[in-house]
Each structure stands twice: as C-alpha cells, then as structure tokens.
Image (cartoon, rainbow, N blue to C red; front, top):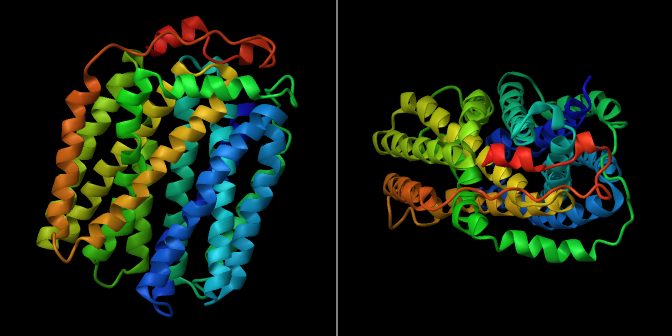
Length: 409
C-alpha cells in the first residue's frame, strides 16, 4: 500500500467515527429531549476547534506520526465511551467531546501529511486525496450507522462496534507511515509569524474566508436539517443515514471533476462549487416548502457537490499560499472556518418561528450566488514559496515547489 493511502485511511477512520452519530439522533430522541440531543450533537465542536489549532503546532514541531498515532487510539476510545453511555447525557457528551478532539487533531496534520506524501500525484493531488478521505469517512459512517440502527438490534451499540473494528484494521496500516518532518522538535516560533502572513494574504481573505463556512454549512443542512423538516415515511433512521451518505458521498464523487477543474486553478473549482451550492439550497427550499421527499436526493447530491468542491478549492489555495512548514497550521485554520458552517442548520431552526425554513434556505442560496462574482474577481493564487530543505524530508516529498504552485494557479 502506498504511503499516502495509509494516512488517508487514518483520516477516513477518524472521519467515520466523527459523523456516525448523525443518524443516531433519532435513536437518542426517543429517550432524551430535542434540546439535549441538539446540544450533544454540537458538543463535538467544543473539542474539535481547540484540537485543530494545538495539534497543527504539535505536528509541525514533533512530526505528523507522533500526533496521528494517539489520535487513532483516541477516535476508538470515543466510540468505546459512546457504546457504554446508554442514556447518560454526561457520558454521551464525553464521547462526543473525545470524537471532536480526535477529529481536530487528525484533520490538519492528516491533510498536511497526505500532501507531503503525494508529490508523485501532480499539482493538487494532496488536496484531492485529503478531501476524498475526509468525504468518504464522513459519508460512510452515517450511511452504515443508519442502516444498522434501523434494521438491527442494539441501535445505540452496534454502530460503534463497527467503528471499533474498522479502527482495529486501519491503525496497524497507518502506524508506520513514513514521517515527513525531517527535524522534529525544532522551535516553531518563526512559523507562528508566517502563519499570520499567510492568513492575512488577500487571496485567503477574499476567497477562502467567505466560502469556507459553506463547506460544512451545505453538508449539515442536507443531512442534519432536511430529514427532520421533510420526514420520509416508514424509513426514519435509515433515511437520515442515507441522506448523510448521499451528501458526503457526492462530495467524494466530485473528485474527478475537481481534478479536471484544477488545471485552471482553485478558482474554477470554487466557482463550480458555489453554483452547485446555489442549486442545492434552491432544491432544499422546494423540498421543505412542498414537503416533497423525492426532492431530498437531488438536493443532497447538489449540496454534497458544493461541500466537496469547496473543500478541495480551500485546501488547494492553502497549499498554494503556505510554505511547507506552515501547511498543517494554515490547514487547521481553514478547517476551523469550515466548521463555522455547523451553525447554519441551528440558525435556520432558531428563526423558524419568525422565518419559514424554506425562506431561510432560499436566503442561504442567494448569499451563495452572490459569492460567485465576489470570489471570482481579481487575480489568481500567487506562486507558492519554495520548500526549505531543512524542514521537510526528501526533496520528492517537499510541498509547493514553484512548478507545482504555478500549475495550481
């Protein structure tokens, strides 16, 4: 197995564990209040965002492998806690918090590690591979968990057992993936300044910042909001898992399109993603307004395509702007911005008494449409800074060479 595949499997497994909880919300709603279940779902982010930033710095300093190894164990531990939780709100919250910490610690360093091991794949290969691993895990987890919870006994136990078996298979494969940080332990003081320079870059501020929240905003509207607003008779939990799987599976399925669009740079990927998102929000509004379940699959495909394309566009821009030793940190900040989109379904629900959800979804689609000309204006991504040989191992694993970055631009 190629080295980048080992790391991609690690990211896939952690993402699976992070999102397997989504279709089980209906299971827990049978015993817990709506407010408690919603809080449990959101508690994931409390552990995720700090872990994203801390783990990025640690992986730059101590190496990718030293960070990812305990993360694999932590992801499995989160499922063990959830498995044993039953109806205990405190234990469920602890399990979700652990899942958030594992995800935050995995996604930034994992994306950087995949990129560093993808030098043979051409420009943008690392971003596409990281997005594919993340999307496949996010989609596979709820799809399988929803089916198990719908048709097999112990719906609050069996899905977590499957994840534990998955991690027991993945961990040995990813454990000895090659390290790409040549000098672990080097003081990272200069990198903190460089992070700031990259994050203040006009390209990052104008294109990445406004579109990043739509990554998970579009996805979570599809699988966390629409199944409750447009229930599917007699399917219940399985329908929620199926919508989640279709949404995030579509994010993985658009990778061939992203590869073709990458020849024109990340701007082309972003524009198509925003167009797809606009269509997805319109379909979602129509489904909610008319209570039409048959519109849920096309809405899920469109919103999932938006998620996948904007994820690749954001990671590609991060790779082009950031120097190699900054990549994990800047990617972590990008992921923090994407997770702001988790607030969108809650915002739609919070104002539902005053603003019908269909109207809120149309408004989200209008904002997405406005971002198309706004983010398309201006120049392209500048040439990436050359990789210093002292910070990344062999030259073939270096990120962002001049040729690579110009091709991305």
